[in-house]
Length: 185
Image (cartoon, rainbow, N blue to C red; front, side):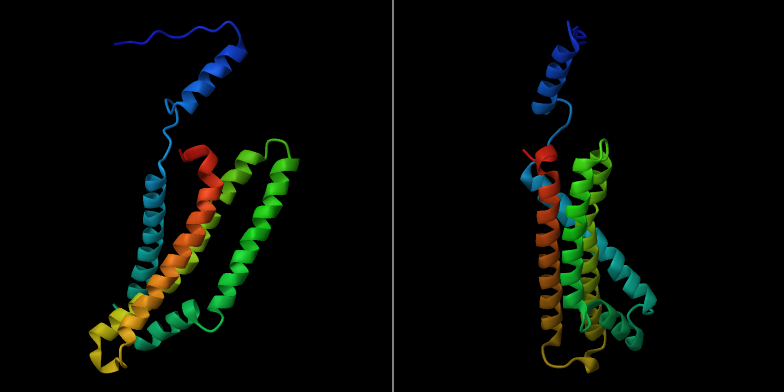
């Protein structure tokens, strides 16, 4: 069945027709909040898996304890909390600057919007790398029970889950704020 091609008396009439199609999801299917959340979780999991596999490969399949501990120290050492705070502050500052650029520079808004959509991924990358390091150490302890101290395995998993949750909450909230008007019903 073919649909007749609409004809329009003016450009305004054509624009109104196209806006109505977009508003009714005929052209751009909108994501539901559930679909949005699922996409964000998969985005985070992809980051996590990349970092976890990277750690596994660089530590000789979790056999090189010294390299594994160096990885953990780099991802979740003393300054990791401060680094996360400063990363969040830097993202907010850059978002503000880019927002001003988008408002002042004609035609810059689409490019700025695309660039700003990378910030949630930066949050995911930072928290996923830390969570992957903790899970890798937990796996090392499972493979080497003589190294285990108390219930350290459960504590490591809780820390990894906490990092993942914080990353998903902050990254997801930022992603939602950046995308809500265009993609969420």
